[in-house]
Length: 312
Ligand SMILES: [Zn+2]
Image 1 (cartoon, rainbow, N blue to C red):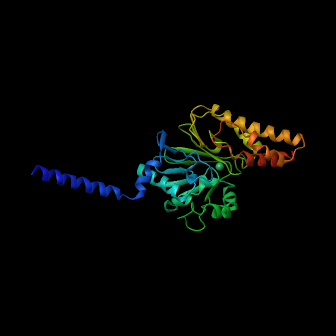
Image 2 (cartoon, rainbow, N blue to C red; image 1 turned 120 degrees about the vertical axis):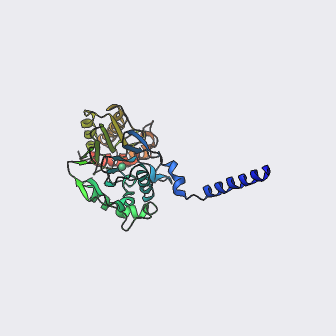
Image 3 (cartoon, rainbow, N blue to C red; image 1 turned 180 degrees about the horizontal axis):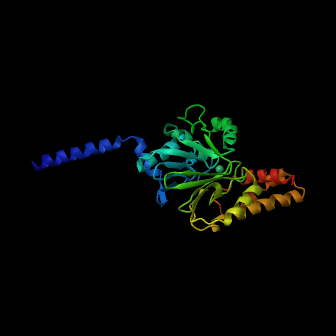
């Protein structure tokens, strides 16, 4: 009798294991999508530190959401519809409140291609006044190079802002005000920061890179000006576009400040010495700075800085 009970018990365990093995992958991928809640109701998913040709490139930016009394605001949606959908699942798991706002800090693929995952929520898609032009201008590039990331998005795949910010816009999630500020060209031509006013948290988008080498796609002088201005403001917590969150401000700006200053020095010296851009690029591996996780964008940054500074 006892051995028959043991056999039945083993069979039951086997059935449970078989059922577990058949659980759809959506559940299995959740543990990989880690969320932190550094401030009550403010959730951050830290992107992976990978290069742009890595299979995990769609998940390399910091993205997240903020929950108010009435609704949710998403801040950046990841580099693919799949990453956006993973974020959306985590939101639905966390709260039954509706997603009323999807904010893009700028128009680079790793922050904006997940927008389509939120279309069913019918939110306001909010971005910098220049964001539509930036995303629209990148449409062919995205379609050609990010077809896999756009899989599942309705045509044309790129979700443009339905509400834009020229200067400052405040939105209320219900007892929780977010202050959105549009900036002059810096990391990109369409940078927007989001401040959770009550907690003193600043979400910088790619205006701040930590550990990963900053990528210049706007204006070097504009970016340096943004850093000078921002250094004097007080924030309890800063969430960069890439890398770990920072509680010390403006100290968290220092490595990026040093890199952009050295980029400026290198380019200005070369121009003053009558060098050509080609010479500078040959030398790029040597002038690439140490201490950053990936130095690949350095050559591109040299080209950008050169174009900006050569006619000054
Ligand atoms: Zn970016």
